[in-house]
Length: 362
Ligand code: NAD
Ligand code: TYD
Image 1 (spheres, rainbow, N blue to C red):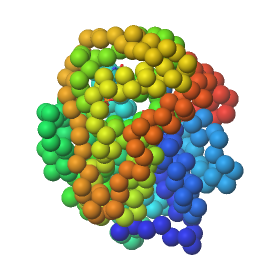
Image 2 (image 1 turned 45 degrees about the horizontal axis):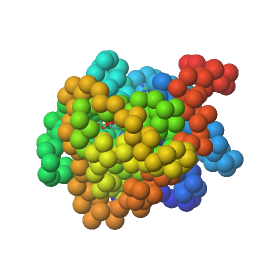
Image 3 (image 1 turned 180 degrees about the horizontal axis):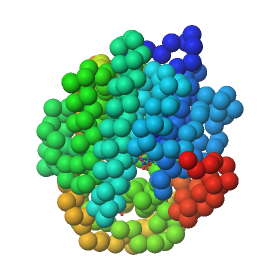
Image 4 (image 1 turned 90 degrees about the vertical axis):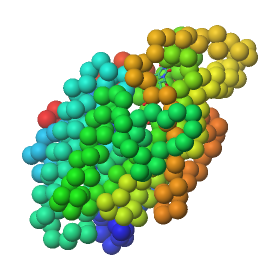
């Protein structure tokens, strides 16, 4: 059991904290854990945008230290451990998009497998030295995609066999295996969470929901892979962040927890719901956005269905999602409509100019 104390600042290493889930997690944790100091190590790939954390309030900024660097750099990671004596690491950094993994798998083995192994090795070296074995946790943030594809029935439990389909899910599966191996072989206190599809603010607009919102705004075609009947189990990112903090603080070392939203929808249902929502919000005639739907060639190895059985985290850690899908999808659409400049800047890479002015490259 790992509890935050209020006596002195707890230094936590977050990797990938400039990405979608990591930046939401940092905002959430700084808000509700005033004793925590976060070191955010991020290489700022195309998906990482440090301006996601620009508008932190002042005392939160003071408890957030950004380090521009790569998780595959052992000396950098070692130096950070020496400097901050972390109580734990929550490891988000990854190449995260399935379609990109199909066209360029190497980056996925490099970051998701080698990068995770570098963090494990440096964590182990630190943990062996720091004297109190119970005083450290390595929390690996993973995906339900490691379990492969479901048919129309059933849901993934923590016991489901690994059966990844894409280079992305294969690389995440490999990293999960390494995390478990470091626990079993060396006793490193680890946690793994396998989560379903997230949506919400700051998601890079290559993923289904933000891509469809943007294309509807611009009246561009809405690409549906295959027949649109593939199903995902959707979770609002804020609910995911809440679950992650719960696992990090209360989870049992060595354990795995599945996290899911209990909101299964086919891709077609999602796209039609977004079309209808945006007909209203953009004052377009009912049904006009649906005319943008365009069926395109299916993704190779496209998993049919994901669904999470979240009984373990509900029973053992008393977690369940707080947001309904309808409410959170509405929040997400509103966020993208009011932050169209953010979308523009990440699509064009404009924020990188700001980055070059403000941060030195390592
Ligand atoms: P993201 O692509 O939005 O962000 C990834 C972040 O990692 C970026 O900031 C990027 O700059 C950083 N990064 C990439 N390579 C790096 C490297 N070598 N060194 C340091 N930083 C690096 O991803 P996300 O959607 O926020 O996902 C975060 C984690 O959650 C990933 O591990 C992903 O597998 C997992 N996950 C995501 C979802 C989802 O629906 N998005 C669901 C379940 C699990
Ligand atoms: P995505 O957001 O890429 O997440 P993942 O592949 O990790 O589940 O895709 C979600 C679903 O939407 C998936 O079944 C593929 C489908 N999809 C489309 O139909 N069209 C698109 O343009 C995208 C990006 C995804």
